[in-house]
Amino acid sequence: MEELRRQLCEYGRRAADLGLVIGTSGNLSARDGDLVAVTPSGVPLDRLRPEDCPVLDLEGFIVEGDLAPSSETPTHLAVYAATGAQAVVHTHSVFATVVASTMTELPPIHYNSLLLGGAVRVAAYATYGTPELAAAVREALTGKQAALMANHGGITIGTSLEKAFEATRLLEWLCEVYVRALGVGTPAVLTEAQLADVITRAFTPPEHPRRPPFA
Ligand SMILES: [Zn+2]
Image 1 (cartoon, rainbow, N blue to C red):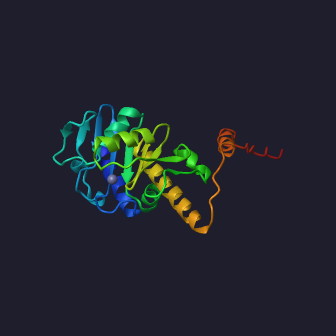
Image 2: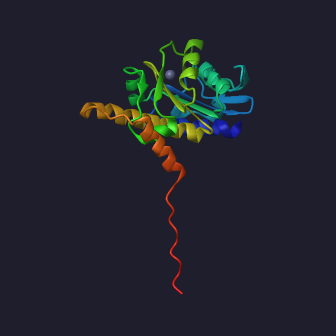
Image 3: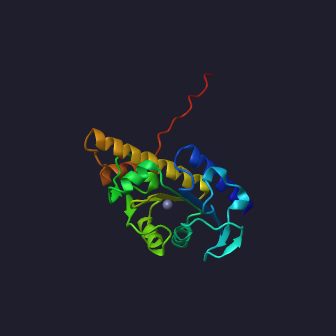
């Protein structure tokens, strides 16, 4: 788990540097087998040390570490129980929180939404850290790489911390584009057919044969 705890510090710092989290308002975790390393409660994410990050089993019992795990740990564990995720990133980033406080889903107006599974659902509001919030998030993530949490923030998953972190950056970008588009006019939402065409295109990239050398 040493490497995963080190990665939590690295991506915690990057999240803070990019303004995705302010102080302690976000948490990250990564899984290896039956163990999960998670950021601790009450430590700013840009000041984490690997040894600050508790290691838990999948039932939430602390296996290693002196600090209390993030208060949102029940949500992280619920996500691991329900998905094949190897990492979870949760932030209160500005545009994700704006969308999560005003809408019931983020519609796909850009084809990069497909990287998160298309439209992003907003999980029903529940008090932070509760099993109710964990259940709502688990449900909203069904078939997706991202979900928003009503009046709270965003959450993403991935097969590695790097992928979950990039999904968080993409979620924030998509939310920002949507919010800014709303300020200009009525954003056009991509149709199912248009999204299907993007998937087809992604699986059939153009060929760029190399010109044979002149004899
Ligand atoms: Zn939170």
